[in-house]
Image (cartoon, rainbow, N blue to C red; front, side, top):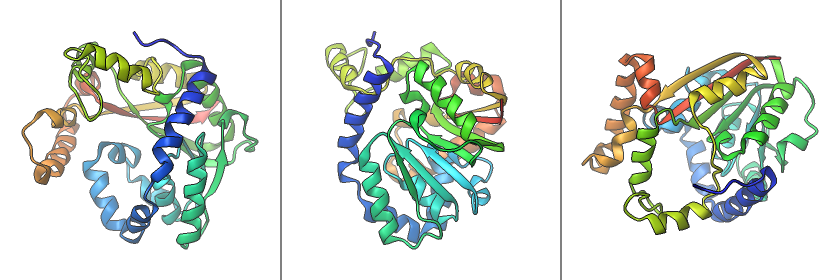
Amino acid sequence: MKAEKSSQQNMDSNRLHYDKLYQNVNVDSILKVLDNLETYMATVTSTHISWVGMYMGDFQSKVAGMDILELGCGDCRNAAILAALGARVVANDISERSCAIVAVLNDSYPFKHPIRFVSGDFTTSDLPAETFDFVIGKAFLHHLTLDLEKEILKKVAYVLKRSGEARFFETAVNSKVLDELRWATPMNDRPSKWFQPKAFKQWEASDPHPPRDNSSAHYSKVGHKFFRTVQITPLGIFERFNRLLPINQNNMGHFKRKALEFEAYVPLTIRSFGARSQVVIYRNPK
């Protein structure tokens, strides 16, 4: 089992990992997206599970003129899209590389409201109370230790307007069997846990994600500590198998779209059991 790190050690590990990852972000590709935003959003919000989840409920139509804080903004693509849609965006990340990307984006695109960057640990930021209509994170919370997650959500409840919404797209682990099958399947630079155990242990040691609970039950329980309303939507019961099927890249988008559409007809308990991902929404801060 992967050794646990302190919250500070985990944060330092993530900072080093993402400083390296975001060193060569292609800002031109983000600008190209902004120049073709309607077409891009129509595609990704129907075929790419993280965008389907993040923008569930026609979220893009609700953001113009809103104050939005994005935690873990990463390569800043989503922050740029929100700003291009007319939102007043504050972007936060522990990697200073994100700050450099924001600076280039602001210089290169005529946002109505330039993106503001807040660096470092969000829990120590001086953002005022009840500032944001939305606080969002796209694959953010599962990078945190459970102790830091509580501190983050406490601060989210503090900076969120009383009528606001916190929205997170996260991985879902509601079945140990399906999770073991996931680790058994090699993907990109990740070896198989079952068939390449030594290589897997080496990969695991360098992976920045902490060992933690990513079940829907956990996100519901921790959410209720700081919010009165918790809504969790499971996603990906069929889409999760796309890597195992003999589908060529030309047909992959069609498969993902149909898989995500069809799961709406599956009972919630079954969808939750088999979910690859989940949308976690918190409202009514305590």
